[in-house]
Image (spheres, rainbow, N blue to C red):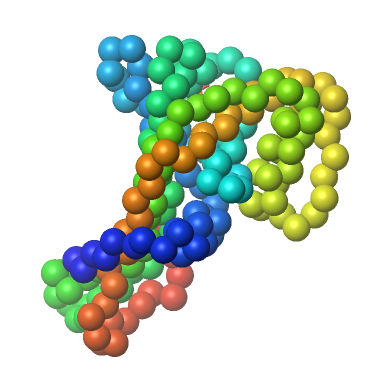
Length: 167
Ligand SMILES: Cc1cc2nc3c(=O)[nH]c(=O)nc-3n(C[C@H](O)[C@H](O)[C@H](O)COP(=O)(O)OP(=O)(O)OC[C@H]3O[C@@H](n4cnc5c(N)ncnc54)[C@H](O)[C@@H]3O)c2cc1C
């Protein structure tokens, strides 16, 4: 598989914004990993997440706020020869971000975070009831380290694409 490292910040931000989901990896005090699929928002090098106030993830993060967040664009299956297994590729780009979760408690900042998350999924403007804002837990992750790679990039225009996502 051909793999390219991506360096341009604009390109990496476009990749993040093109994703529907992220995978948030954390580790408990015994080093046992726990990874959750989550919705997200992104603005100014900060990833915004939201959750219930309690749960296994919150218990872990209260002891160890370090997270590794992975994004992967919609994968496309490609092949050079449909009958040759090793000619198959999955074309996708992925981004891995590391940082620490900080919980946001201030009301207006929580509303701002919810707006950033909703902008990832809709162009509409939303309002939120006060109990909804109070009950939601907002996670902010300022990015400390980011890497991005392209996978399955064809060297020549000989690959055929499946015109839909395979997953
Ligand atoms: C597409 C998608 C988007 C999501 N977006 C969000 C989001 O934005 N915010 C959010 O809070 N949650 C989201 N979830 C749900 C999230 O993945 C967790 O299930 C949820 O946050 C509860 O996690 P918890 O650690 O509090 O688990 P708890 O409710 O404490 O659950 C305890 C146990 O249940 C199991 N468990 C928990 N979550 C899952 C899971 N997803 N799959 C299988 N087993 C599980 C684990 O073994 C865990 O130890 C999303 C899920 C999907 C599939």
